Image (cartoon, rainbow, N blue to C red; front, side, top):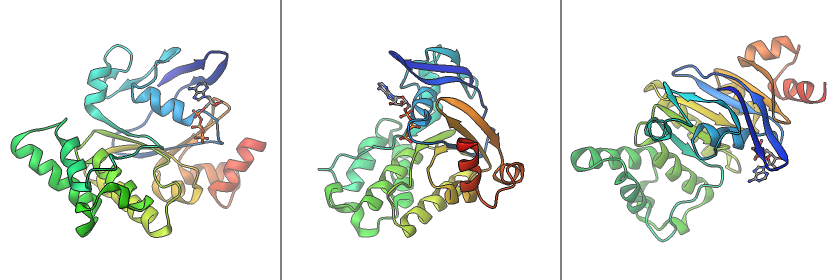
Length: 234
Ligand code: ATP
């Protein structure tokens, strides 16, 4: 993305941000609350119009060719929910119907069920799921169509250690299959373990990019949390 700006009326949420994500990597977007991460991810996902600048996703411009962009990405919002009255299986079948039919459809549903890894509970209604189970179902929904780029906003927030760990394992697994992942997170431990490269935004501006190791060295910091605090507070 190149010099991207987004204003909501008087509020300029994103103030000229440029960065690029390499194919096959896990790229983490970090920054304090309200710094513009969700706004940035929503613009990349074609859900929000840019005020100015440009974003190119796999050769397609988000403004000029949003349908092409939608064809190569999947976006999992922070506050995503599944239809509560459906079972997990019925939800995956319903969602797969937007992407495929026939044999390909059945394969996609099977892949989703495997990714969700909910055992017998795949046939329980979504409103009986714990937060972790619901999140696994949503990740499975986002990943089963094999997007080129999976965009995930705070995908492990509020999850227990095991669920967060298993979701990170799913993310690692899909990158091995060639999916590029762009995620936001407030968990610096997670970002350090999972991300190949990181961009940090603060008050709508890009303040740093690099690999976790580079950033720790640059700031003389023992961990990314220290990098974060130094970058924000100076
Ligand atoms: P968090 O970590 O808390 O989720 P964030 O980094 O994702 O925050 P954004 O949600 O992108 O931040 O918000 C960036 C700024 O834009 C904030 O000042 C926010 O209040 C503002 N903003 C976001 N959405 C809207 C909207 N629909 N209308 C007006 N202002 C908005």
